[in-house]
Length: 223
Image 1 (tube, helix red, strand yellow):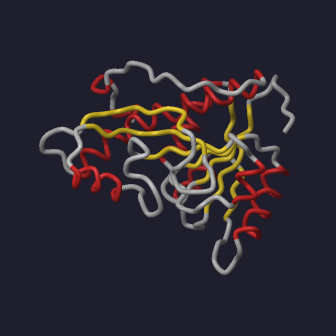
Image 2 (cartoon, one colour):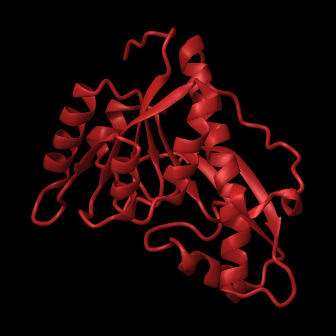
Image 3 (cartoon, rainbow, N blue to C red):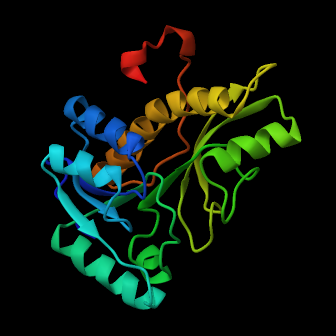
């Protein structure tokens, strides 16, 4: 895919839920200049992410999955994204498997953020509080967030970045979720910048180095 390197990279965000990671990407693009969220896609017409997109005056698209083949869904996705010149897809709580034809149309251009340190606690059905409950059940001392490329399976693509956070004594699902979400909102925009910068330079992104940040110094307004 050819791209004019003098303008921000146009990206599409796919989301099934409220879209807090979408909001983090929208907020960051104002100072980044490396990418612009031009389109938000959802499989649910009532998704909060679509409301966030409308407030931000971005294109929206609802893709129906019921009673349709993966190829049919994929062809519709590609048709719409091509019309908007989308260069990168960022999954932000999107609960559907991306069709193979879309994966092949956007090689190393589809990102996902997962609320655990993959390959642990990943796979089909592992999302949201289910992940954090599994972390508690196993009793690990560290969890975190992972940004990875999307392939044809759930959560198995090459890892771009991971940011660990501790699991503290007395933590419940709510505490772990809040701690992980805080770093998701920092990590995803930073890695999206990293990937889009490489696209503009015509190179393949190297693994992203997570910055050293004191989480306790982050105010509620930055979560």
